[in-house]
Length: 192
Image (tube, rainbow, N blue to C red; front, side, top):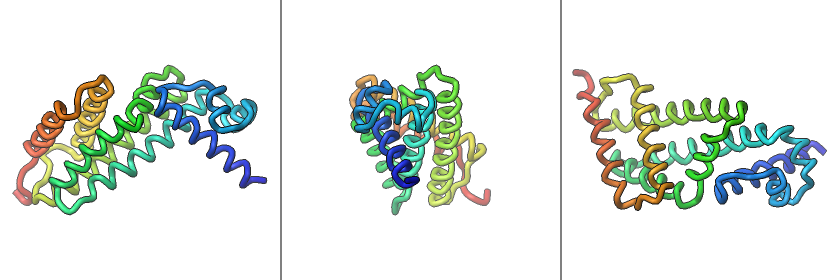
């Protein structure tokens, strides 16, 4: 019985994430239809639409952190930066950025708190990845790693908004590379 409830909840949550990716929004009716369940079951697992959106934000953010951490695990820093750019373009194409932008725009208090917390978690994950990349180059940041992570998260989200607005990836790729040059300007040789 508990296993069926877990599967139903997971199915509802996955339907919500997919609707956000596809449409940039959702209704409880759409979620129920997509999950092939009754609307009441959606409300049983997620009392309010805000609770559903908050859970979707957590799921989407966790998926993003995992993918971004994988992108930064590359043989060379150059490869990691290229892979992270490719991931950003992929997130634009698969609707992840559309979903995340919609969740950031939500006015529901629960969703807003979750999104805010997840933005901080994303910045921390990017900070750890950047710290490793910089160390692989024999460098150390001249600013705190948290500030560096926040800077890179802003670059990722800013480029993502531009992609969502229809700016061609080829036009933004240079700006993304320039941001990384900016990051390098905030470092010094390790041990100096």
